[in-house]
Image 1: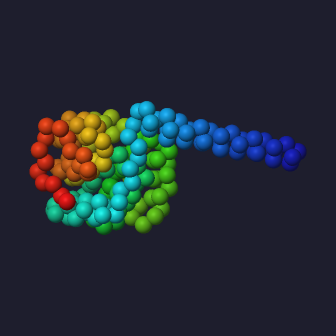
Image 2 (image 1 turned 90 degrees about the horizontal axis):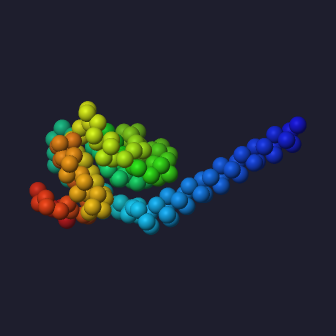
Image 3 (image 1 turned 90 degrees about the vertical axis):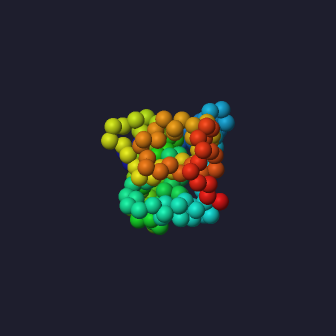
Length: 170
């Protein structure tokens, strides 16, 4: 009887591993090559610049990072600024890794959400003191419809077309 249970557990684990491999391949190979910009890591110098920018504002309690990826910037901002950060990510596997990484320092003030950012921002009671977007130019342009959801919007690397920045941080 124990042999049958061991074989069954081995079979189930094999299916889970194969399922994960197929899902990862679909999201990271097919999805990114044909439909999305690849996940870009956030270097420490950029994290420091964002924190310095956030600290210029008074009474910041809530921050939303759009396209949070693995949550590096979200955790760094939460730790250094002592604010609550909502990290939005639309790829479930990346969200899964970010959720695990919440156990790292700075993760207690981070709330990971796996959702389309624009659908999430359509919510009635959604408002953040600061929004952070590290996205490609086309997606940044879509954020202009949601400017009322943020007191301040910080765009990293890519500007929006037709909107002059208030300040450019080097």
